Length: 340
Image (cartoon, rainbow, N blue to C red; front, side, top):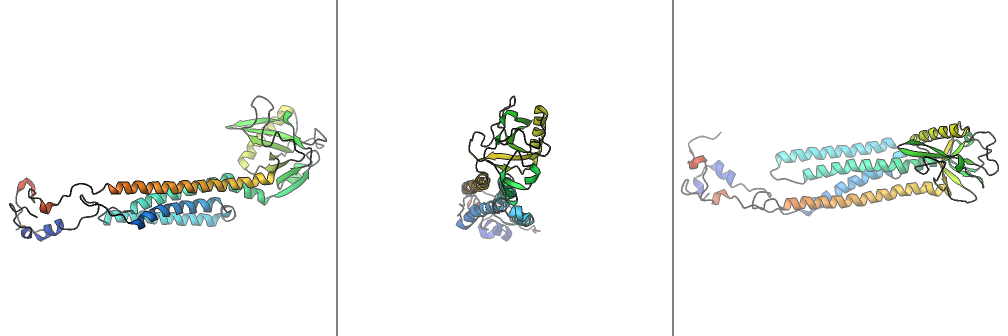
């Protein structure tokens, strides 16, 4: 210190105070610019991105969530434990490290990636991957005649191919409204308008594709006039429950019987459409990964910009300030007092 008018030379100051004031300050102290290390920058871009990709992939694609759900849950729990460990390290670093570090940012970014990756993967699995594997576990039935075959005969079928000439009877279609509009219409044969068993067992279905005031069914491949048509079995239990209510309303309205309906999505090529659902899930997964990488890159860039503004203030070098005094009211320090 150069406050000679009060204490003389810096060597005359108390050793504890001199040591404290002459201690090297951190990179974020005023007057010190941070020199960025490329290693933590790279890790903080790739680690959160990798966590997102892993959590999203293991819960959505490949079928692991369908065939080995316990294994997937254990892996997700392990990632969660690693995240909690990073939180503990970040808390320790904030208490024991003199300078701010990347630990806090890493804990936050990994936590967000972990939660969003798991949620995104489970969403893809629920709406795309799981229905595909459920259909794959069922069999493919060929040559079904809606007028002669009963629904119980193909109760274990996932893909149904009807005989040429089978079509949807749009004149007795109806719906059930519960947020979405659940539309139903019976599938009949060209040989007989009424099934021989007097029950309509096969129904084409769809959401929000019919009129609320008239028999106007426009779901799936409704306008196709091909010789052979097929159907993709509805495997979602919640949707099937709503379609049953729609069939009950239709049966009551048109005075027909449908005790055990089989619900299918009317399709020209049911195998291809079922596979397309899985492919769509993979495309969504790819888009999520690209978006996650962009977000990780942007977040690190924001953090770097914030760090770069730290330490740009004027240096408060007390040892070189001739107007700075050790005590309040410009009083000299009593060096005879023992410090505890």
